[in-house]
Image 1 (cartoon, one colour):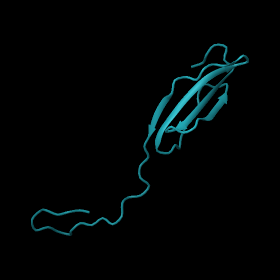
Image 2: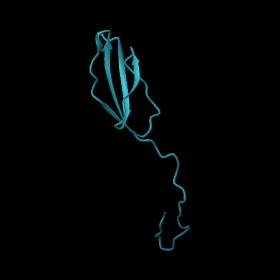
Image 3: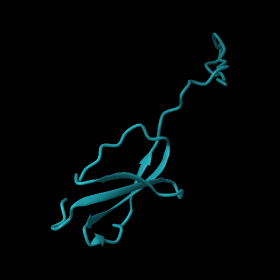
Image 4: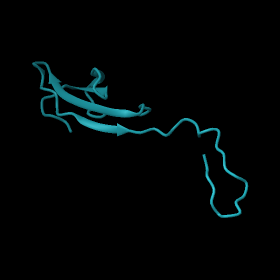
Length: 89
């Protein structure tokens, strides 16, 4: 959402409670983001003009959960069971 009299917008992100990094510093009000690692990503932004920048917005958090890279190995199970009971490990 554009702010009246703003010339540009700054957006920052951080992973979990890490340091903030600037990911956007331009006149546009949106930024596409992809390829993030697992964790909680925090985002904040502020509007700026020739007189300076406003305070940072509140933080919006996004939880990213990526699937495991590989299936488990070493799966064992019996070929048959005479009782209908068996263990899989």
